[in-house]
Image 1 (tube, rainbow, N blue to C red):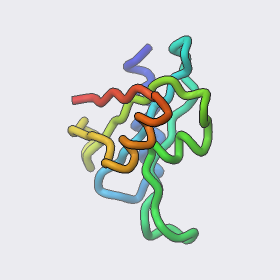
Image 2: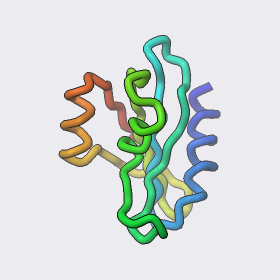
Image 3: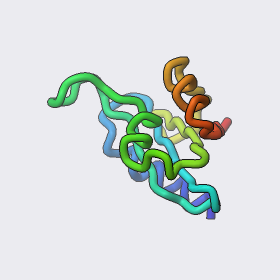
Image 4: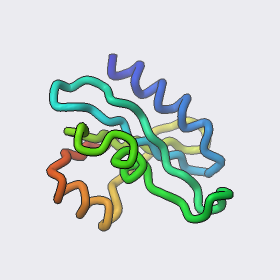
Length: 102
C-alpha cells in the first residue's frame, strides 16, 4: 500500500515544473491517507511559492496527524529531504509528526 502511495506522489509531482519535486503525504490519526500536496514554485502566476507542508495544512488543517515528506529528482529517484526551519516550527507547534524518506 505504501509503495502505491509513493507512486501516486510521484505522479502528482509530475505537475511541478521544477528540477526537484517535493510532496507531502498526509495521514489522519487512524493512519488513513488524507491526500498528497506538492510545493508550488515561486514563478507561478499567483506570486510566491509555497512549501508542500504548508499547502497540506491549507488543505486538511487540524485533521493531519503525520506527514511524510518525499523529494524526487529529475529522473524520479528519491532524494533526501527535511522540512525548513519555519515549516518545522509550525508542524511542531501543531504536534504533527514528520517523517522523511531516505
